Length: 100
Image 1 (cartoon, rainbow, N blue to C red):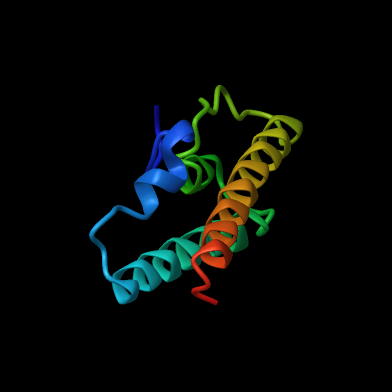
Image 2 (image 1 turned 90 degrees about the vertical axis):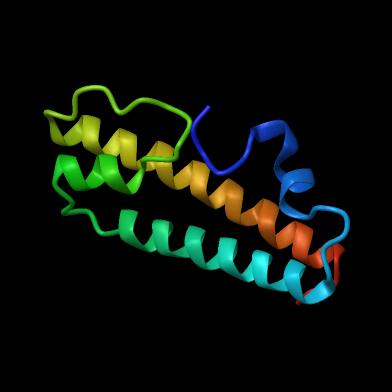
């Protein structure tokens, strides 16, 4: 599976036992910044197919052939949905740990 973590172990993998509070905060901030950057990049609609594939490299699905605008837009929507879900998970974890 592509991505930083396995879908079933996202929260477990993010906050390992034995990490200090500052390490947890740094990790949450890093991933939050990462996913916000991905979302911002994908919201730019004029990405070429190679840049689009690179922007969605760690999404858990294949791009297929992005030869038409409708296929590119569908792929962008799937990627945006995935990255927004990941960001929501990170924010939920931060809230549970009372980091923010």
